[in-house]
Image (cartoon, rainbow, N blue to C red):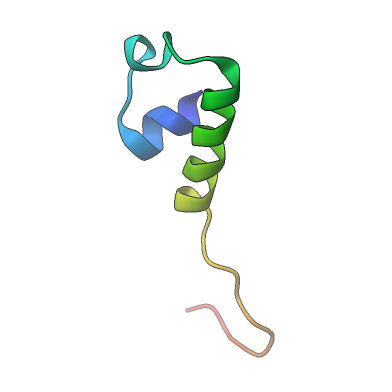
Length: 46
């Protein structure tokens, strides 16, 4: 659950009471927040 800690600055005590399904939902939100935006064809990274 390190991704939740990085995205939302939560510690283990914040996540411990959450059921697994809720953690999975928050994990998806963290992934969306931390994932770089998709680049379109023809764009160059700088």
